[in-house]
Image (cartoon, rainbow, N blue to C red; front, side, top):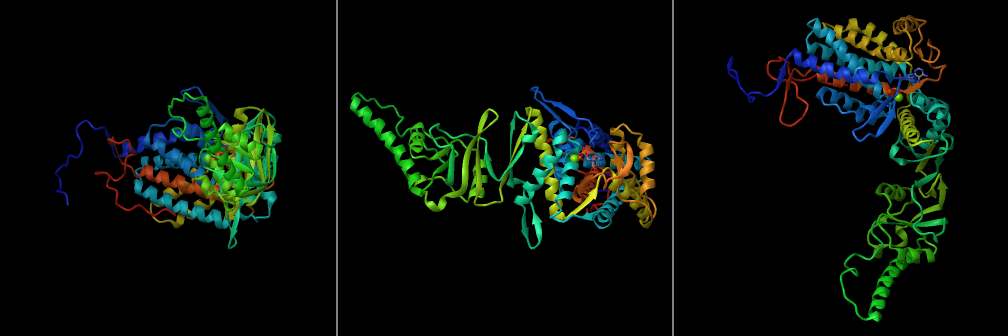
Length: 549
Ligand code: ADP
Ligand code: MG
């Protein structure tokens, strides 16, 4: 034990340090600033942000996580909010703005309690109790079941996720593609569905219309064949995936040798050609009629391949090689001598097609049907980029819904329902933690509030109406903000539906990071620029944080 009353100096003089309440308030202010920055983007009527980096590159988006990833935040507490957005994105692919503004609002409500001298430990304990209860209520009382064959609901969920993105009228078509793509690649084991978004390959080509966006039953490669004399179509493709250059190694023949005799020179050239010819013969012997090579291919080798009717692509991306291996059943080989028929993959058709002003290669009818690609088309680079983000959200929410089999209505309806639920629940919580549970309930209302505000509505009136619509025996759980008509309406009828995980995860990570920020009572500028850790001297925090759900 440390001696009582003897100050122990652990910091060099001049180290910047902020302690106690000041530290908490400082962190809360930074986190709130980040939350406020993305708040105006929430919902279908939310505004877009234009992000310009130091090189002048522009991203126009409404996507919470994109905004937070692109902006430079310095403050450690602000960085924690960026982490909240990233976690939400990883877990659900949607709901990033919601998670961030919820964190900001929890901290704002915590600040009010701190002002009333409620201790941070009490607040964090109450927040954890409230979050656990809210997640339980969401899953058990508010959510409804979605069957895997219910394509209509899955499409509505995809459209809801895309509502706030600038993809306009193409939503319907994109939703249909997304549902088909996800259902083509999910796997079922013991009745449990799992989805890996990595199994859907997305390629984009600007030029053309969003309506031309299409689903390809196979792998789409953004490359053309390596020699004009090669066939553009190969049926019953036997595919070799090669991870080494089909070239003569530098040094093998490229060294500086003086040849005076022209006959010797010819011999030399012949030797080089023969070596390449032998390589191509090895490929041919294996039975391959298609080659995807991750490295370069010498012109002479290409010439021999073309003569043999082999279709080849060089300088393939590694990620494409991996996808092709999975889809066609081919093994990626490095040494050509090892290539045998058993290493080859198969596909019914390989075809090079002109898309816009470039050529792409379609590998369809693959051995493993669980691999699909989506080719995004759209007027400009900005348009295809935003469609890609929307489509990614759509794919993820469909996958998450299929995995969990549970959804809720959106438009602020679950948040209002939860707020009412927690108000009823609060009296069961003993001590001052009750105040924190009530504060948590009020914080949840930031979602319908922001949706209303962003739609130019009177948020106070909307909230009063919403509470009334949810309250009592005749209350409806699905009433939310219709941002288009400006009224309170039934979100089920308006087809505004979201996976339950978007909501549970947002509550989980918002609570976790709000609690973390509240537990910091000492900011010390350390040598490494790591976020400060809690539990410094003088804070009086008991050890052991209440477990998260
Ligand atoms: P996030 O990054 O949190 O997903 P969004 O900008 O995508 O943020 O907005 C999501 C919110 O918009 C959710 O609360 C969702 O229910 C709501 N929303 C989506 N479409 C509608 C709609 N047509 N009417 C009302 N609310 C909607
Ligand atoms: Mg969204």
